[in-house]
Image (tube, rainbow, N blue to C red; front, top):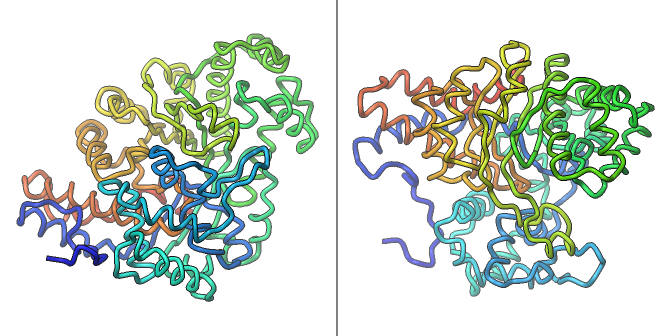
Length: 475
């Protein structure tokens, strides 16, 4: 028995309980556990890698950027102000990082059984060498040791990238971002290791309160008349070109639904004008987003950028949090999402074109076997992204494999991406995915559905090769 206060990571964690299958999983894992990390989609701050400045303290690094952490604490009545999350109105919030850290330590038991607990324990153990569990008594030990380590050169962002064996990481920036940090990395070794992805939601979502303002900014950036339909589309092409000049190989689209449309040019012009008037209805805004997915798919056919679609999140569900703290502060909720009819207009137009590559995600797991796997198992343009966001967990990954493999196979999926803001959790997240894939493959081998050589080959592909190929990072 391990002492209850000891932080111990069992070498067989997440593997099957059956001894024979566990042995197969362990053998597969040993062969792929040290492969380089490809992180083809995420939300880490490119500033870290451009300037290689020291991280400030334990709270700044491990709590404030991680909405998985503070949404759980908020759910138990702990205010975001007490966690130091900045308010939009400038009202005071907790500034003492040690007090913020004590709040996490006191409430760390809330994370039992969650993937956040796995990720955080792995960071504490493997990155910072902690051997005592985090709790109220060990809070100062953790805070002091981690914060002191962060002052050393070994814990600068670039050194950690090397230590974590991260071969490449992709950040995600909006269409209006001028990418100064990516520009700063040009001509350095980071240029080929940290690239951007193009996320145009800020200029294609007419429901946003800043949509018209953003369209005007788009005009300033590109010199195009963005109040005309043709000028607007050309401006988007120019922004894509700029992102590609700084290494981008993919776009990303976080729409509420997967709906697409294929309107005539006259209909597009009329709809765009209504959206620019500020008088558009919710239905018109949804139709505009739908048309823009099809337009952007056409642009991907032209320029070869991989298209990621992340639908199905009811974003900023808590209006009080949105009004006080802004977007993306842990109040997003999965919603029921339909794909078969929603994607048909776009797929009828572009889905058979070999130049188009779409990676499709979902927060609605009920669609895996019924809709997504059959779609990806047919259309040459479609691949399935891994279990995402709320389902980025051991159980979620297993559900994904069990429900999609029999119809889509492995090679209509794209490996794993961590989709995180929390830089230090990247190795832990990839390790969980590697262990779960080895667990799934071990079950197939034990059932004599694939042989061991195939299992090893699949383990390499799921860990490394598929992501490089899907995101066009192997060229």
